[in-house]
Length: 84
Image (cartoon, rainbow, N blue to C red; front, top):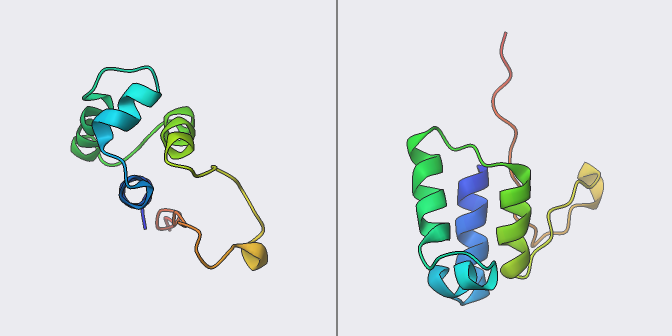
């Protein structure tokens, strides 16, 4: 899945609404919704700091782990297709 799909799943699994999560970040109520919408319009990219911050308020950590140690319930962001 891509980063935005993973973030959306984390938000859903948190059981909290985007307004409450935005507030937990100290941002305006529409921050998370607007960030996701803007990222989708621009092609799906998110800064790692934004991804880590939103993941954190959803109860997740952003981590790089060896492939063979990824927990089965992890939300894995797939790399983009390789060129060439």
